[in-house]
Amino acid sequence: MRRSTRREFCEHATVAGLGALSGVSCHSAASKGTPASAPDAAAKESGPALTTFNAVTFATLSAICERILPRDQDPGAIDLGVPAFIDRMVATPELAPVRESLLRALPVFDAEAKKRHAGKTFDQVTPAEQDEILGTWQHGREGRPHLFDVLVSLTMEGAFGDPKYGGNAGGRGYAMLGVKPDPPISKMALMAGMHHGDSGDR
Image (cartoon, rainbow, N blue to C red; front, side, top):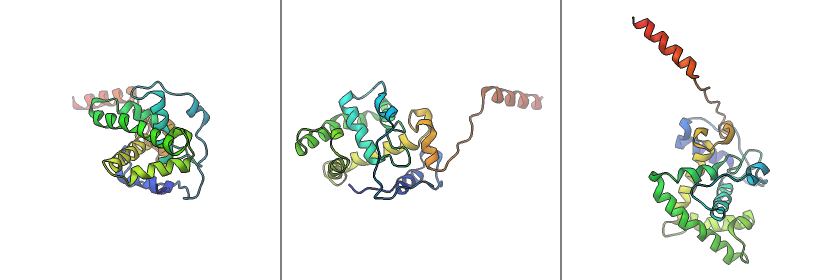
């Protein structure tokens, strides 16, 4: 699998317009050779309540997302809550085809890892070994490249989208893009504005 720099990944997210961030340049980049460090311990150990996946398939999904957006000087996919975001998002009826594809594919990632690496599951092999397996999906046949693209898109949405949907934990994805979102309008301020407008109409 070709490793993208963090700048390339962020620019891809920007071009996609995720979270209404079109035209924003990414100020944070990682060099191609920068080794990825481990995800935050708290993010890794305090597992979320799962909606779609079981513990095994969620571990595989998490490892895949972390290879797509690994942690370096900036948060990685796991730190940003991307796997939990995907778990919740694909539970919706609209994403049923994606859900079914992932439920079929994730065990295949594990099976390929076990075949190549002495019975180890995908999340147990090294990052380089994971990249080899992901490369077969990125450049494979029978719909595998499409599924890989879906995983990249879901990872970007979870990393850089609106935190209200469960990803972009702490808004740290925004910080990676150099974005400072507008503060939410309080209910009291909104009501005051509506009242002022009503008074002016009379």
